[in-house]
Length: 220
Image (cartoon, rainbow, N blue to C red):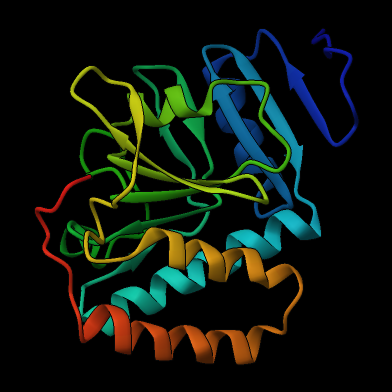
C-alpha cells in the first residue's frame, strides 16, 4: 500500500513508486491538469491553477513569436513528458521547444531519451514550487536552458559544465533578445488584455530586436 505524504491537495508526493508504476500512471491519467514529476521513486502531482497555465501559455506564445520574427526553426513540445529510465527521472515542463535541434524532432511522434536531443529551451512556472528538484532533473536530462518565472521575475538559467544551472542576463537560444524588456511583456499580462499586448510585442520585436540585432557574443 502506498503512503501519501501529508501535503495540500493541490500538491502531493507519493513515495516508493517504481518506474513501472510511474509509466503506468502516466498512461492512465493521459492529458490532465496535473504536472507530474518523478525522481528516483518519488512521484509528485501538482494541480495547475489558471494563473499558472495563463503565464505558461503566454510565455510560450511570446517565444513562438520571437522565433517567427527572427526566422528561426521551431518544434514546439508543450508539456511533453521528458523521462529517462536509466536515471529514474521524469517531468513535464510547462512549455518546451527544440530550436537548434528542431530538424532532429521533425516528424517525431514521441520523444525518447538517448535517441533524441533534449529540448533546447524549457519554461518553468514556479508560482507553486515543486517539492522535488525539478532543476536537477532538467540538468540530468541535459536541457541547456530553462526560463523560470515566479509571477514577478523571469530568470534565464543556463546549464554550466559542472552540471548545475547559473542565472545569466542573456539567452543561449535568443542571444539578441533583451530579456528585461521581454520579461516586462510577461509581467504586464496580469493587468492587460492579451490581444493589444501581443500586437505591441510584435511591433517591439520588429523595431528593437529584428531591426537592431545585438551581437551574439556580447557580455553575459
